[in-house]
Image (cartoon, rainbow, N blue to C red):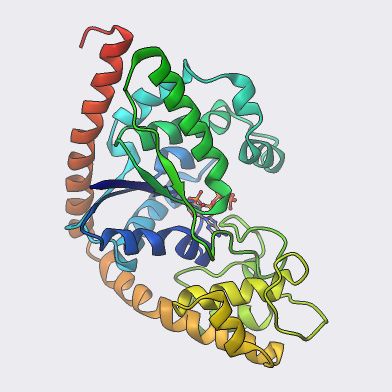
Length: 330
Ligand code: AQP
């Protein structure tokens, strides 16, 4: 049995990038009976960037409902809120004492976010990878399905786990990242050289999983491409078209080669419409199920409570194992 662990922050909106790079794979992994899947709403991570309390609370509900709407099944997977399981914060503190400031200073996301939020470079922003290491290590995780941007954080998680294991024996399972072959980095529709990002101030750059069909189509029609008019998969030289082809391949469950073969010779405008239609049909059932779930608060509360109980049970065992190895009285 393999343990799969991943998480998503309830910040802004769940994007098509989050769906393709992460959540779509989570759902696929939970249908394998050999996998034990644990998925979290990383709400402790979210406050590394200042949040409006009312909006944050609304986003937590919205993301939790959307995770279930997209197909995470609480009967098959543990789906919980990180802040409901205190062991995350406790292990993060302990792991802080086994992590070097120099390592955190080198993290790309820390550098990027420090530049973006220069007025609020808080300790949490710097410590984000340690909390993420705690998230993953608490569950004896084998595989962490994430998008490309999180690869560096998986590597530091492995380094921290190995460091602890070298000191105290076999405390943590050393996890591996799982990066999808296609879709690991869905790009902005307005600047295909940068990642599609939840916090992009330009709404045309990002597809929300809850966007209405006409909005999705409008955004794809406006997607930035190039002036060459040839359809080819070449992320370096044809970033916009390659991004559209990658999106299409994943939502239609095809390989890039099949998708390129089907689309070659198409006009750019027709490709954009084709991608728009496929994305609309992929997201339509999620949006409908979301509308039902977001109005079923009691059900969501019950699911979150059950998820947190199951998660805490596993997490506590790992935490005790580590604390006892350090020498704590437990
Ligand atoms: N564009 C993307 N393509 C593929 N995978 C992606 N992921 C995120 N963006 C893309 C993956 O989604 C999971 C959840 O990530 P997150 O909660 O950290 O969300 P985020 O969109 O990356 O948000 P940021 O970076 O915190 O916000 P911004 O950049 O908007 O300020 C992860 O597995 C991630 O790899």
